[in-house]
Length: 428
Image (tube, rainbow, N blue to C red; front, side, top):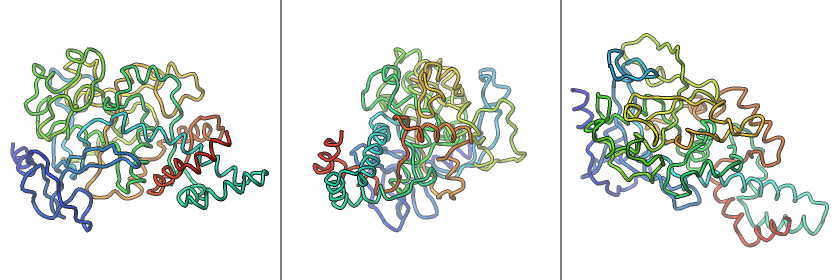
């Protein structure tokens, strides 16, 4: 109870105002306590909500501050309603972070998907600079001279560390878009690797360390101060006011943000789509011996692209499977059963229940050191690396590697100029 009261004291939820930006403070931090709206006290001042505009678009992701604290992660072995995959309860201390107010939508994921086409265009321009056709080479050179961001992009020797991979075009859009292509629907069927690469692309182009949440961060945010099986004020009887699940969803996903938010202003933490976290499932998981685990001690870092934990339940889940402690995990052999590729796609799932598996992003208040951030952004294993590298090296539209930095957006805008479009159209 003492912890809950402290959290409520540091996190007051009212209609979010617009905050003055101080360039000397981290993004989303203000120096003075706002007169209204959610705020979390921190060393630099107060964490407040902010919006991130996706590069090159007017699409925004609303980020909500979450106070740090100690909480009970998992469920008691004496809980009769406990699911067989739920974690044994442990105490975990988390530092403050921001989390997206909504599940990631298609309108936010499409710009990442579009990278495949744009990387193809950049490579085409680079190749044609050395054309044996003198007139063509001269025209390309002139266009590049007038497009400094394109020039930078094609001159850069991109590696998997400083670049980002773009997903292949969808093999079967009918599966991924089973419930339509409404921009406000939650994006789904991306693999854990693709989800990580999305956060890397967004992070590298905005300069912010966006990433997937740890399993502990996800549960803490979903609880919003609650110590029960559901967020504060939510029960199995009124779950349909907060979650799209099997009794309320009509077995389809819904636009994000249509139902009530939890006490910290987060929508759809339960139901709609289950959300990928960074942790790997391990039925024989052993925790470090400590009264209170640090956030890093609580993470079960992945060593493969399989058995990734999914949280929150989805449109086809029962009320019991929408408990804040409920969990299931990915299964490549089942979730990619319809994938005709060999090796199987590193970026896309093809089978049920992945139309109900999506993601939500977070950002730590304190920047992560490079070696930790890499665990959220890069390959988990040599096997995944080899799969991705073999596809990209083989060409034929099987994924692309390209630059990831703030100037990428400028290069994409230059690709839309009349001069460059005319050049590219003429070479097709």
